[in-house]
Length: 109
Image 1 (tube, rainbow, N blue to C red):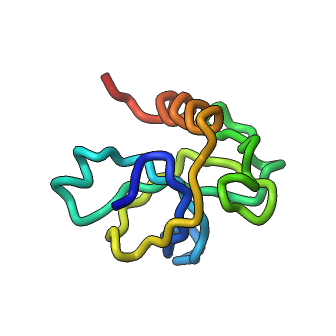
Image 2: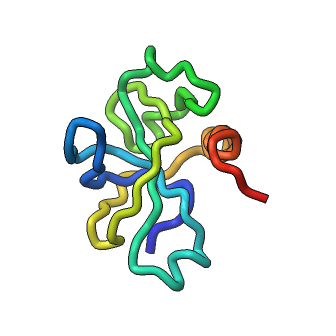
């Protein structure tokens, strides 16, 4: 079962079509208990373009299972749990930064 903060690969729908790419799980255990899908956010290797307040350049990208410097983008998708493959987990520092950026992007209580 995926956990929030996991780094996965998935067929991620985007503006230019569907592409297999890394993503970060942002849905919770409560969500996973009741749903057959997972909410993910985009990870990109285009770190120079990650300049929005809702973007974050990952500090510990290699430890998270990524192959090159990467950034989180607050671009979400929902995919079936069976469609993801776990490749790693964010460091505590990176996960806190991702949560902060996601909080800037999504209106939650």
